[in-house]
Length: 171
Image 1 (spheres, helix red, strand yellow):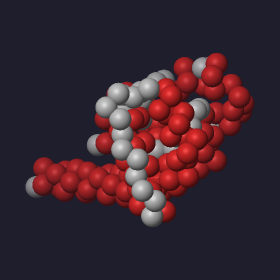
Image 2 (cartoon, one colour):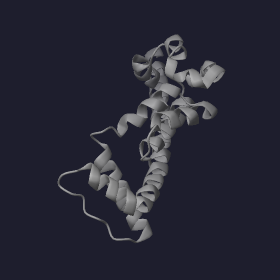
Image 3 (cartoon, helix red, strand yellow):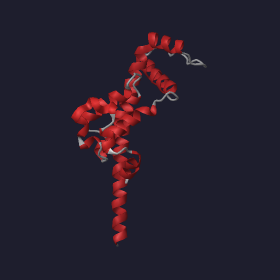
Image 4 (cartoon, helix red, strand yellow):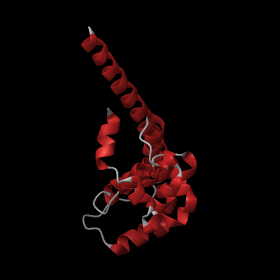
């Protein structure tokens, strides 16, 4: 079952509740649904984590945590998925998001330099922030919806497969 896969990498609930970086959530962190591994909480966490991973901003993990709590999504999965855009993957992901935004706004695309520098990033943010953020938002919404649907579908398929296997074993 997909639950076993996720449970293997999940921290223990007591350890998570005692983590100092999550103290700002107060008693909200004690909601058991934030740590449950069921089809709905994991699907919501996938959508939230994938969305915030596509948004170019600092403190993405905090934003994912703040969205996961009221949505009753699995908190560790939502926060962990934000790391899909890490320092190695950020440049190509955000450049693709920028290209999507430029296409939507019908503006010319600036080519990506061979060597990335902080000055180039600063210049891009100053002059091309609109296509970057629009593209990031659109890609984030699309990826979140696809992640939600894929997780729901995979979970249903896996449970149905397991159920059919048990039925065959009984015969």
